[in-house]
View 1: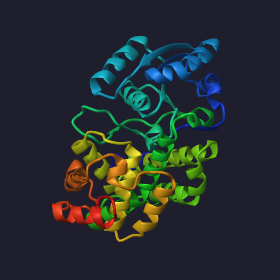
View 2: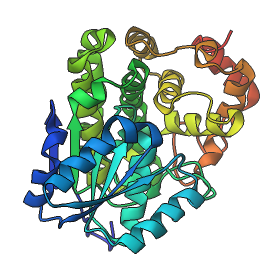
View 3: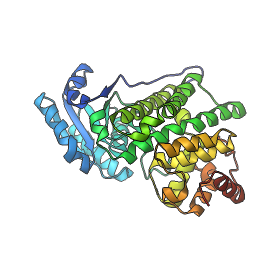
View 4: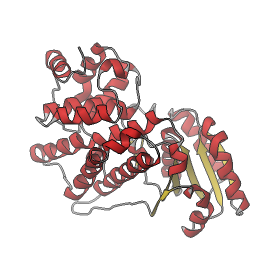
Length: 353
Ligand code: ZN
């Protein structure tokens, strides 16, 4: 969003979902006119499994390739990759991996104004296609604005090979849209914040998708992976349309970010968001029991113990969640929860004992 009344929407140009679609990467680059110099940002593990194959496919099709390895999204490491990318001067960047490689590619592409292609190897959160990047060390735990990927290539065959825990976490991130949208609407009503019905409905649809297909998701396999990755891409598009993370991130995300602060990234993002969603839907007066049931059914943790954190950390996170992003008004209000209220909330929803 820029001037009053002007709303600019940047969207991915192409989204390709299917079995073996990554094999067509060279064709996609040509079709989108993205030149013949690619720089792939990937992780050390993914490099051996798939990135080298992708590099071969590209060079066989006369696209020169450079591989950059990233171990974390610490800003110092991402900046080092950025310098390497600058030297190589690619026509297109490719983020190939789980969250980290894609976040790094997104950030670098935005800084250097280069188009980028997102190739997720896991369906663990909606960052795979959103215009926001999570980079550590920038002084905040939330994401920073970047550009959406020019193309998203979601290869079901590749993503199906990732551990089950990852796509379950992706389902957790999607369920979080229930409370994210409620918080957004609340901020609209109480603070006059911009609210986009279409973006909100789209985000909500991705959460409802998880409920409708919870049987399939609980079984796992390629069909489950497809449902989750399609939901995550839809939620990302909702963020592109809204021009902010609002439709996808509310108090449940603030709780997850707060838990990252107090317990140092104890579990997967989507697992923490799912726990947050149970508690925040309780505060919103919604059917939190149904949400908890679905979360349990798809195989996600529903207690602090299952999440691997001490009860006290959950309470602590609840009490500081409102401070994570003060400009983001949610059901937690401006002053947040007292220790007693937080403890009661976590106990009433069965998150802690
Ligand atoms: Zn998320």
